[in-house]
Length: 63
Image 1 (cartoon, rainbow, N blue to C red):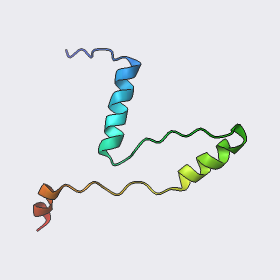
Image 2: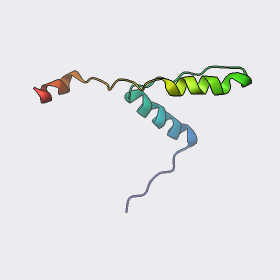
Image 3: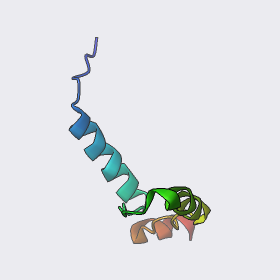
Image 4: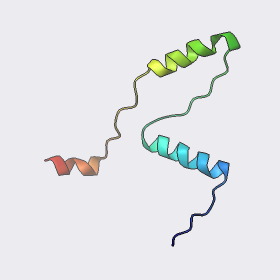
């Protein structure tokens, strides 16, 4: 049986950030007035996702 080692919250967050970075995302933190929070969240939600990462070595697979 394979046992999993419990991870701390910091380790889980680090793995999540690394995964998002690999997918092309960048983390941005901003401070906004409480009355503008919904407006900023709506704007962030309206942005398109990142373009898929290009791996030059894999282009030969499609040729």
